[in-house]
Structures are given as C-alpha cells and as structure tokens.
Image (cartoon, rainbow, N blue to C red; front, top):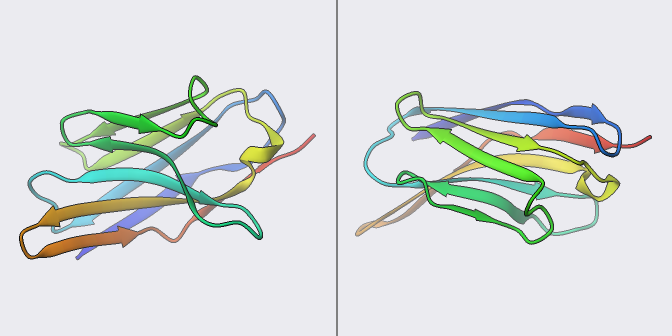
Length: 119
C-alpha cells in the first residue's frame, strides 16, 4: 500500500502562481510514475503532469509552459508549480502513484486538494 497526502492549493487570481505538494509513504520501491490529475465539476478526471523515477516528465497541452512537475525520490515527494493560472485551471487536483509489475498495475490516489482560480 502507498499513502499519498496532498498539500497546497487554495485560491489564486488569474496570472498568479500556486504550488501543490504530495508526500508518499508506505511500500515505495523500484520504478514508478507519479502524477497530478485534476477534475473540474462535470468533467472527467484528466492528467495534468507526470514524472517517472528517472525524471522523465509529461504534461497536458493545456499546462505546457505554465506548470512544472518535480520529484524527489529520496524524500518520496512530488511538487507541481503552477504559474500563470487561468480560471479553467480550477479543479480538484489529485496526486497519483502508479507502479507496473509483472503481477499487475498498482495505482493509488490522494484525497485531492481544491484549486480555485478566480478574480
């Protein structure tokens, strides 16, 4: 089992910056992918950004150039620096940990943290 705890988020104005953090604990080993997903009201959950244990990153087109994902394997933490926020970034943001093994895929979610962008 892996436990994920998000922090950060809150209310920001358009153009401002916010930072999300995720702390992972439990059975963490080997290679895995961690990511941030978000879900706005009435919409499906979508991938925002992800990072592998080797440091490879992937971003949704909607956040490229504005958001930066980073991770610290030694501390089992992951951050999402969000810049130039837009109202459409408003959503609940979820931390995700995914590990693929021969025995199957193991995926864990945090409880979510609200990000609201409004003037």
